[in-house]
Length: 239
Image (cartoon, rainbow, N blue to C red; front, side):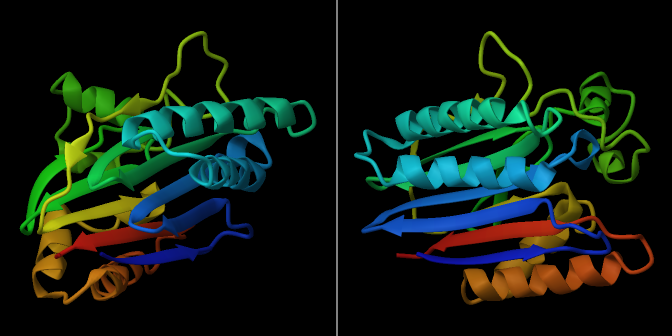
């Protein structure tokens, strides 16, 4: 297993993204959070979420899916507790857990996870956003999300008030040779296409090289576009 991480401020004054990769033996937790600046203290919301995931990961683990639900719930509680003094701060989140040779992921908002197997895209999380809903209704294509004027309008986020959880969890699956994962904030994925991700993966020797190649594409495409914070984690399993 190899992995790489990046978290950059872009052209903003504050970096409201937060990433973490944690290992315990052969188990792993990866998480990317993108604080929502419009609500104030987004950097605190994303940090609280990541810290909650790390704390839960240090406890006894009962399985990939169980860990994720407990971590999301713990993060939501921490954010709501701090909202009283932080103007209803909120954050997106995407997380991948690999426990006991099995993996699952969870997400909320427009931070994404891409799952590749043998350099083919198997699955991508669907954004909780206005343009994603327009894709579902057939009004725009999936590729149009990257440039849509409403791409930052989210329908769900951590810190929203809910009776039932708004995050989504995948089914737990067995890890296989050739599995690769990209977790990233919207500041990263809006400047790189699926095909460019795949081409970089095909030529990379490990997760760090894959990330470096994609980072070059993202930063070149972002020139002149007042880049948002951009963050990503790559994970490659070739055992």
